[in-house]
Length: 188
Image (tube, rainbow, N blue to C red):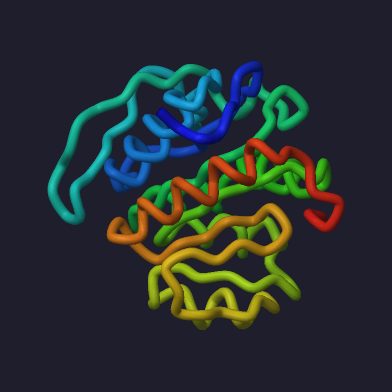
């Protein structure tokens, strides 16, 4: 049982083929256990392929395609990592508009591991304190963020973590931010 109640909230998970499976499933289970309606949003309909590092994982059914959704219909966003997933997402302008709109609307966003690559492309990390998988440090710094090596960083509704080992702290802080709702300082 979680200490955060997300009843009545809708949380979007944005991912495509090559997402790190545990970085989707653990946060998904945490958000669902807190009572939220959880939706898997992707670039295509059907199923997307999860991975366990460099090995294929399971396939997951997509609920909606990013071309058919709006951030207005969700209360928060989760961006799992995996190397291929955020690299593909950041090449899709509609997906980046979807990410950016959460910031414009002051809604909480949680990104783990390589997930912050999408935040760089959406141009929403300037003057923000973040963490990520270490190889993203230069990209995030060049985009104007202050990168730190900590298990979980929260900056006005933006929650970031480094890797799957950080999932317990990431999930707890993500739930807290989703329960709090909009953040005035969460801007694009």
